[in-house]
Image 1 (cartoon, rainbow, N blue to C red):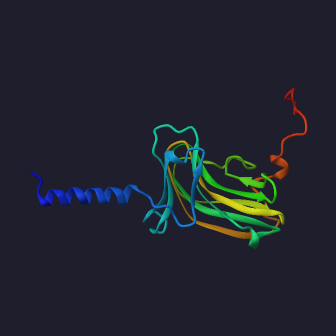
Image 2: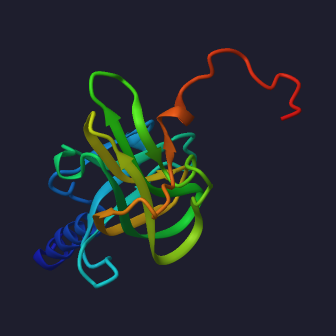
Image 3: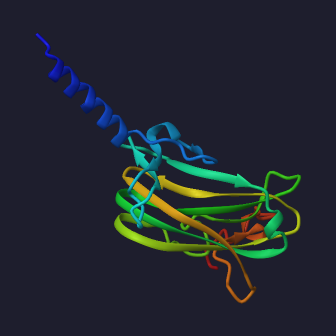
Length: 199
C-alpha cells in the first residue's frame, strides 16, 4: 500500500529531477543546428561563473554526427559599417568533437554571408574540446553597410555539455584584426585551382 509519505517523496523526486535536468529556453534564443533534437538546450540556473544562470547545450544521445546550437538573430543597425567584437564566456565538459561561440554577418538580398567565424572555420582553429573551465573567447568581424542581420550563439558538435554566459558586442577599431573569414574567402573559386597540390 502506498502511503502519503511515499507518494509525496515520489512527487518531490520527480519535481527535483525535472528542475535539475529540464532546461527552459531563454527568452529571445532559438534551438537550431544539424541535429537540435539530440541536445537539451536552455537555462541552467546557478551554473554561471558568477553563480547566476548560464545557457547550456547538453547531448542526449550516445553518438551524434552533427551539432546543436542555441542562437539569436538581430538587426545590425547599431553596427553597420563597423568592426565588431563578440565575446563570451564558455565552459565545457566531456566534449568529444568540438564546441565554440559563433558569429555570422548576413548580406542583404542574398543567401550569402559577408563574414563568419565559429572558432573552428575562421582564420585559425580555436575550437574547444574535452573539459575546460570558464574562459572568455572573442570573435571579430566586419559588418558592412549592406548587412541584413547578425546571427550568433554557441554550438556543441558531438557529445558532451557546454555552458555559455555574458555575451557582449563591442565596436572596435580597425587595428583589431578580424578572426573570421570574409566574403572573398567564402566564395567558390571561378575555376579549379591547385590541382597538382604544389601551392
